Image 1: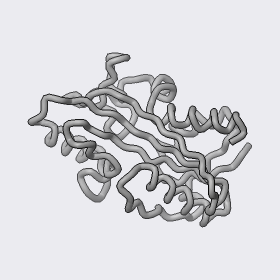
Image 2 (image 1 turned 120 degrees about the vertical axis):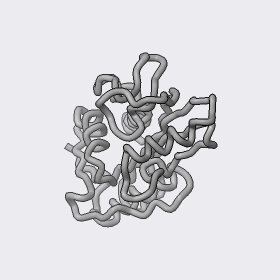
Image 3 (image 1 turned 60 degrees about the vertical axis):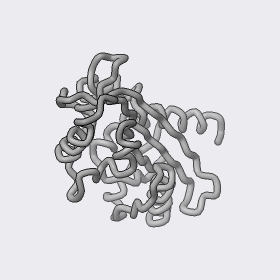
Image 4 (image 1 turned 180 degrees about the vertical axis):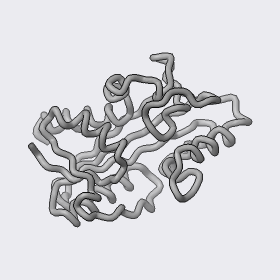
Length: 196
């Protein structure tokens, strides 16, 4: 088992990532279990925030680190909420308030297209000069009413035409095979397989 520190304290994100990585022999340890506080995320891009989080966790633990920075980008809102997805409605973080704010912001717009983005960064150590960076996108549209009890975040509003369901209605195994995070992880795993 390869031990990696996950630069996140999000239990639902850990469960989703662990389901994908455990069969590969990777043991994810949430940073909170190792006493690592959350890193600052001052950047305007997913890749910069993911890199900052991975380096922070690796620096404080001495372990290789994996960080994911992800969010929802809505076309009619100029890409918002983007990197602010988790805190779109302010502090403290609240999925319900974020979803309410998103629906209110979208109310005057006909274009409901959106996509989730996930950027996953792996660093071997805090000063790794060549971090592995993988990205995934999952395209869909925002529905007017929340549907489904699975997933987290904006999943109940994110309709995936390919399946005719919201991300929150999808079976977890299906979501873990097709989501933005799954795509990014598959890309990262492929790079490991090539000896990157």
